[in-house]
Length: 156
Image (cartoon, rainbow, N blue to C red; front, side, top):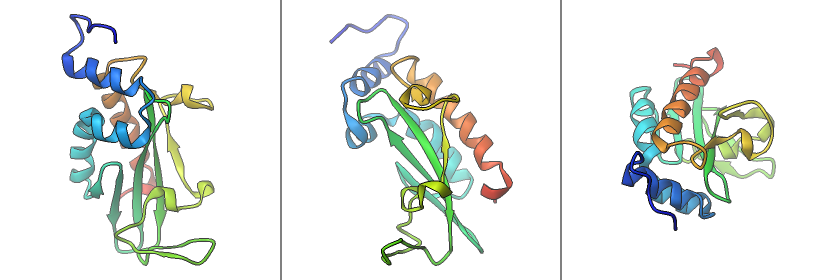
């Protein structure tokens, strides 16, 4: 493993090292509090409940959903937003997902919005910890999320 640069905090170096080792979703979620520490306070202030990486805001006529997805090869993530009925989700095969358990991943991909750092396909367009400091990436992700949640179809 490389040694940390003097301008990179030990936390940021550890996060980059872990996320660059192909940790996948679960390991990245557990080992990277950076995004969670920056984004979760905003989501809580916007009345979202849930736990990282799945959040929901139950309203009178819909549930707003936000889910974080990490690159299975490490080093990056995207966010997905969606909405569902206050009654939850009925899957294509007839299973019911309760409102308190619904995630953006439970909504058909055609009905989800993918929030990524830049235009393009593939993980190169994702928010990348392996290309920038985690604190900068987390703030950029928060900016994009705020813009997405400000859209009329996903707002208070």
